[in-house]
Image (cartoon, rainbow, N blue to C red; front, side, top):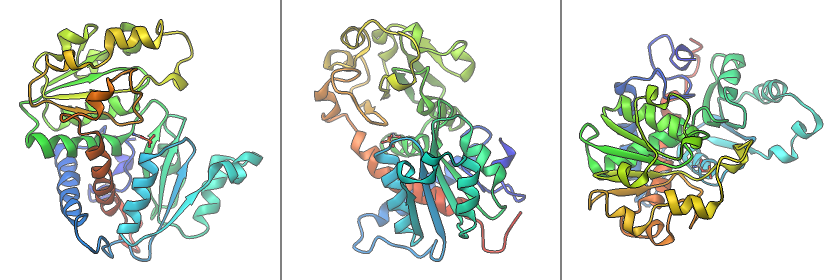
Amino acid sequence: MIDLQLNSEGKLKHFLTIEGLNKEILTEILDVAESFSSMSSQRVKKVPLLRGRTIVNLFFENSTRTRTTFELAATRLSADVLSINIAASATSKGESLLDTINNLEAMFVDMFVVRHGISGAGHFIAQHTAPHISVINAGDGQHAHPTQAMLDMFTIRQYKQKFDHLKVAIIGDILHSRVARSQIRALNTLGVKDVRVIAPKTLLPQFVENLGVTSFNDIEEGLVGSDVIIMLRLQKERMTSALLPTEREYFKCFGLTEKRLKLANPDAIVMHPGPINRGVEIESSIADGPQSVILQQVTNGVAVRMAIMSLVIQPKGNVS
Ligand code: CP
């Protein structure tokens, strides 16, 4: 999976996972995103970088933020964008994923942006598409959500400038979270030495420390001194057995409240990839409060996705 992402010159060809990408590549994405970010405040928000290219959004799972920011990002890069309505596509008549891809490829497309419920779907597509086509993973099962992780890194850098001195706490359903897996990889690669995951034992993967984190089952203990707090929702759609008593009980033990937030550093930022469940993992006043950067994350999603699309696109005629 690792080599598949890079072309023969060591440049990004697909963007499927943070795994295997070095600090230079991640920093390049952040730097390119920075230049696109300043463009958002200009009257004309378009650049011709992907003019004449066709990008297909294939979302087999629901999405609000990722899908729309990808669409907007592609439009701002002047690409032609097709967003396939999967519910109204031939998938409902039994067409396989590969046949869907082959048919779209026959229309001379340049890039697939794929969200799928099965881990590894983006990787599978990247292995089976023509060499000039790039694939971006917009979330696959419980495996990875690398563009979300990069917009989160961009947001952290925007508020905190450097990574190495930070204490980052990720709180919630780590077990089912593709976002958390990608964030942990990105934080470690960018030099964060203190990454904490905070969750009940039932929502932590076995041997989670092997990912390069410290685990806590007590939110108050884990929050002390944090600079960045990342809240995650309970992914009930991925829970196959009862892992929690009730949502009310979960909020009592693991919800981020005003009182608990005071345990973090006074200038700590509060993040959430969304969708948020108010009163389940986070108190509403914090989600809307002065330390929340949740909507800024969404804003940054456009610039970061523009950066990733512009970096993976293959020069015309390059099939390496
Ligand atoms: N953060 C995220 O992936 O949100 P969506 O499901 O709305 O895309």
